Every structure is written in structure tokens, then in C-alpha cells.
Image 1 (cartoon, rainbow, N blue to C red):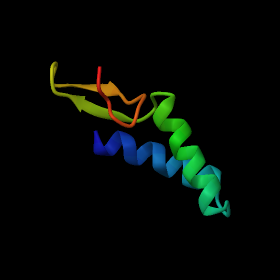
Image 2 (cartoon, helix red, strand yellow):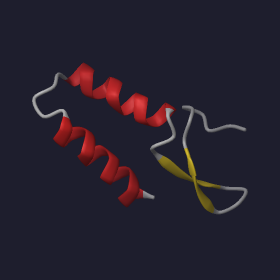
Image 3 (tube, rainbow, N blue to C red):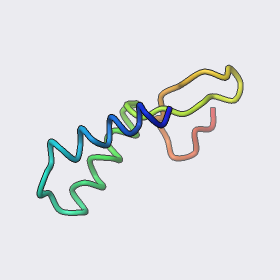
Length: 57
């Protein structure tokens, strides 16, 4: 999970080198809400895309 999320973060940082902190924050939130970041789903014990800040069903 961490490796996948790190990969997304590195891609954002590389692509947006020199961007403002706010622009980087917005891009990370976009990745979160679009399901590019993952977490371990407690019900299935598998990686699942995050699409919300709460990850509640």
C-alpha cells in the first residue's frame, strides 16, 4: 500500500516540480478522490482505491 501511494506521490512531485504547495495539495486530493491512492479494506484485507476522506461504505 505504502509503495503504491509513494509511487503516486513521486509522480505528482516530479510532474509538478516547482509548483506551489497549494497546487500540490490540490493534485494529491485529486488523486485521492479519483481512486489513485489505496488503503487496506478491513472487510476484504485487500487493497482498495480511496475515493473519500472517511473511506466509509
